[in-house]
Length: 327
Ligand code: GLY
Image (cartoon, rainbow, N blue to C red):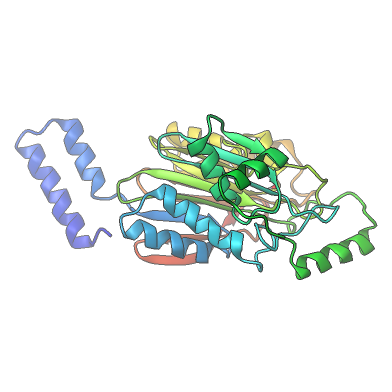
């Protein structure tokens, strides 16, 4: 953590170098280093708090952002009370829990799984797709076969509680098409920068409750649900995946930051892109975005009131309410 005293010392050091004739670019870089907030980790929803805690321990003990985001989101994947991610996730309309996840490191390596069943940690399977195969994305039965091949056990992910919720939905909705509204939310997306200033991201979900069997959202799509570029920053998304995919949400935000927008401005612009195409007043679906940049600045913005996020920086891990578009 950069204390005020350390920061003043670093800034003074930087100006001292300017005086003694250090080339300008180098001296500017040094004075910026003094104000970079790192490590930093940000993740979606209240369940992000516990996930951040695990990530933070890794980051503060000098670990890599990639390990932090993987281990962080695994906390939500294993928590049966988080009914939108991993174990205990609400099933599709046929009663199957199907999982989507992706991960990306500071070198632009990435891995992803979609429509994966009976595996507790899809994010770790995504990481192994990245590390052990020449591919980026494996889906369905092929992803499951790969997971078993690299040592994952098959588990039943449908808890009694999620099964009861599904049976209730069946009774009330009589298998009617799903309603994707602001309350049918999902996902843990997490992006982090480690002490070295390296950035990675992860995103994992059981997707929308009562979705069509086979439906895949934005979460495993690199550039939609999550994107990281170590030169610029990273972003992740939550909410109605179909709308996030339409605008390539996370990639759009990173590109907006590359072109000079702050993380907050970039998240707001992405939400506005969606709002331009959809009547977000009449159709109250939710999409939320989070972003960080290389300075350790963060941004959060969503369509409807109600999106919360967890931010750990400067030794404080806290839940915040995101600003929103529909007012
Ligand atoms: N945002 C996750 C999904 O739509 O599945």
